[in-house]
Image 1 (cartoon, rainbow, N blue to C red):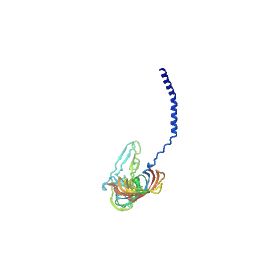
Image 2 (image 1 turned 90 degrees about the horizontal axis):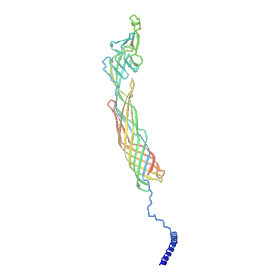
Image 3 (image 1 turned 30 degrees about the horizontal axis):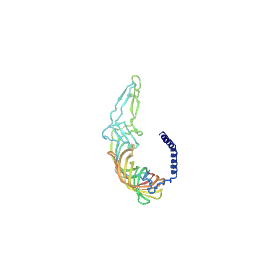
Image 4 (image 1 turned 90 degrees about the vertical axis):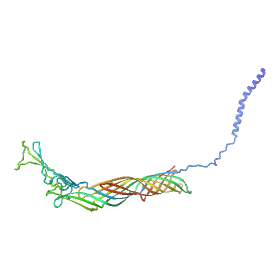
Length: 416
């Protein structure tokens, strides 16, 4: 029995020593088989569709130069007198004119008593005043009277004054979407654009008007009138007695008086008259319209491709204009005497105006995604009325017209 176990042990040891050799032999056979294995065939992708992304959307950013908005100015105006006259028959009242004034008499005499005290002597009313002033030498008449004036003017029906706005440059932003080909070279797109431009129009014109002048005539009592200015003027004189000797106070100091040395004029008008004449030069109105407008336009467009770089794009459709404008009117009345009378009216507004547009643009693609464009623009829109109203100065209107505008557009394009 012992010998049998020993026999089995010898067999097991032999197999254990032989196993690594068998495994090495099997590995060599596998590597050799792998080397001799034919290469795998390349997969066949010929049945798959090739896909290359083509940009469908184009963004344009650039400049839009447009002819100006047209304007027509008119309405009716009034230049009221800045001064209000009082009762011509009331003496010693304050009257203010456009070319001077006549105020209550101020001929009080202030006496310096020489001892630190003063005494006021009031002059009795004699129908004259020393407190007045005038502006122009033409106010003195040939028969030595003084005339003062108040002016007003009315322009009841101002003929339309047309003005063309200035051509101006603005910004534009637009986007189009490729909707597919019509033919090999012709495709169509959906277009949307927004642009911003200025409103600028102005005119200055002499206006036919009815000039009214109110004239008050005063007596100068033969006085010699100095150069234009305001009075009274005063002077200090020494007081003398009936014999011409100086009057002294108890301390032996000279007594003096401050007296008026102004020329005297009547303290109320001798006559008041009013005249109205048709005038063509005195009233000059300056009209100014300024602001800005945004144009929103959308519609279909057609693209004709000449080659890989050059294409023609034509677009037309409806548009809407959002405009904001300020209207200023300055009335400038030049009067025969005194300074010009200047009044100003102002109005602001915002409006929506319908329009249509047509664009024709050449685009040159520098790369597959970027390019340059240059095109012509035509736009025809509606109009609106704007008024500057004032109960004192009248109603001035302007028609703001967006009809028949044209220009050019240029800038950069980007496809994505």
